[in-house]
Amino acid sequence: MEIRNILKDNPIIAAAQAENLHSAVKSKACAVLLMYGKLIEILDDNFQVNNKEKPIFIHMDLLKGLSSDSESLKFLNKYVKPAGIVSTKSSVIRSAKKTGLITIQRIFLIDTKSFDNAIDSIKDCNPDAIEIMPGIAPAIIPAFKERISQPIIIGGLISEAEQIHNALKAGADGVSLSAAKLWNLDC
Image (cartoon, rainbow, N blue to C red):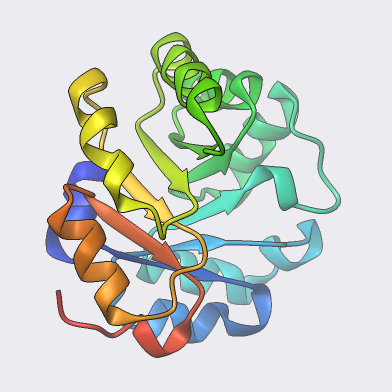
């Protein structure tokens, strides 16, 4: 499975927590980004049922009960079998790629220096996709598209359909959002 194929049918990624994971899986979103998960929740049978219905990406930086080292990623890949992981940490992205998980590197942009550092990190880690935050700044997407080849997901602070449409018009390949009211939006 490749991230480009996942995003092809619908560019919306539902950013969900354990409480609304099932709703996110049942939505029109192409995938789910599990935020603030706990190890006990992802080992539960309910998680596995949801995991078989739709690709689920686990945010490793926010997962409680498991560190982000290479052994933890091997454990996740063997016993939980998510589609992939999301992380801001280059070391986690590199380790996850070695285990065969799809990787999404989350980038926070605050100024030109953070943009330059992000480009360097992306080239060094070679994630399968990147997620640019905050998502309400789609004007930066063309600058990334000029320098990297990975799919671009934009996320953070998105609460209106117009923001999704603006991001896609600017060249985003996907949009991640926690606003459940937008998970079933037709793009």
